[in-house]
Amino acid sequence: MSEARPGPARIAVVGGGAWGTTIAALIARREPVTLLCHSPETASRLALERRNEARLPDIVFPDALAVSADPGDLRDATDLVVFAVPSAHLRSMARLAAPHLAPRSDVLSIVKGLERGTLLRMSEVIAGAAGIDARRVAALSGPNLALEVARGLPASAVVAADDLALAARVQARVGTRRFRLYVNPDILGVELAGALKNVVAIAAGAAEQLGFGDNGKAGLMTRGLAEMMRLGVAAGANPLTFAGLAGIGDVIATCGSPLSRNHRLGVELAKGRPWVEIEATLPGVAEGAYTVDAAIALAERYGVEMPIAREVHNALYEGKSVERCLVTLLSRESKDELADVRLWQARSPRDDASAARR
Image (cartoon, rainbow, N blue to C red; front, side, top):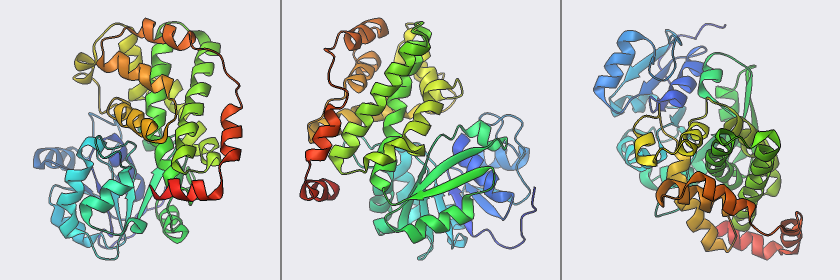
């Protein structure tokens, strides 16, 4: 492991959850970084214990990782500020951070979700709440289970930005040999894929708990990816993005691992537990539960079907049993698997440009 170079922390991570702590620790192995927590109590505990035992057991902070609860410390982060807070709190944290952001620092979102009500992607929430140019904000997504990355296991992700020079700067600053980063100009597709796969993971966890078997679970994941892609393309995303790390890569990891909070939520729903009870006991945030209604609303805006998302909503918020939800999905009329492809091919470039501006 290389030693962090001395000097002030020119990078800051906003959010002391599992993923924010992981990224901060990853960067701190090479250079100083500030981890900004929401509460002084949390910041004091992490600084004293030099670990985040509640989220990342046994992961000791590198010496170059400083912990703070003072947003003013963001002024020193002249190179990069990373936002890693739950989607429901991102707008308020971006507003809090806004007066302290260095005028030329790059901004990176590693939050996967859609904002309720506005249906905005996370990079759009940051730009709007902080009052900065949206082209200054990149997004990182992919199959990134925090504990595995924190332990140094090999992983990959994609950094997306309208400005590929921005994506390349983030790639160079955050990526390592064991945390390989790729770049993609389709920030719309990368962020939608990252948000929507959490909804599919809830369904996959439920199916696994009910004993669907590997074939049934694979079918559910594949059809989930199809509806993710359906919405993404309707919104103006590149369909190939969903065949990459942010799409199928993250679907495989999140739908198949017990480390995934969304997968765990599906398992608990299938045991008959209500969402309000599960929410209070999950170790962290299952973003799919907060994204599903925004995903359905976005699908209605673009006139596309998302049957899996609708049944996840029904299981979470309508009291419908998971068994009945899965029976509903299995009872749907079979369709041409390539029907969506022909619809995409029929879209004109003018349609794509119009969707991308919406």
